[in-house]
Image (cartoon, rainbow, N blue to C red; front, side, top):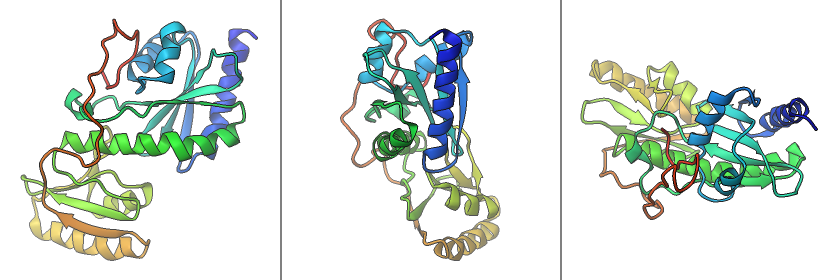
Length: 252
């Protein structure tokens, strides 16, 4: 099978996988000629296990990127272990600072079969769960003291500048927040309601409560806490490119 055929197979598989994952995902394929994009993807693969080992011996020649509406991204890669199917790995956000990844366990990638429907179940129940946890912890570190939200509860945290911040929340809750004046930072995923007009801010928070409650989502307000996310893994030191070619456990 030549490069064109393998690229088409990868692109078709990724499109089907994106359509089966929970939430709204889009798929973009990067063929061998997209050398700069592939190099950037290699640096962002958030893995120190299976995928890192594969890329150490088989540099990235093509890949598909799946992007969720909240900015989360997965990548689909060829596997070279003699089995059919692909590798799926998480991508670290581009713009988070280095310190955001300290004490956050890498959401290592997984091997999946050539059946995108079965693979979607595996990705959703395994990789996505670990990835969303790692994302929440990394984003939490970027504006220390913001309590992470839960699927059924939006946790808002007062900030020293008078604003209210929350992260992360799902698409449904996010739409309610934006409709009531919150602004989402696309890179960190954090929603913020400024405190320039305290009356308007208080009114927005009051109105959001019943709207989320009607969707079965609770809400709570908290004061910030020190920068230590509960349940994080022991701190790890990301490998240098020299020790693990092309890999990083953090965004560049």
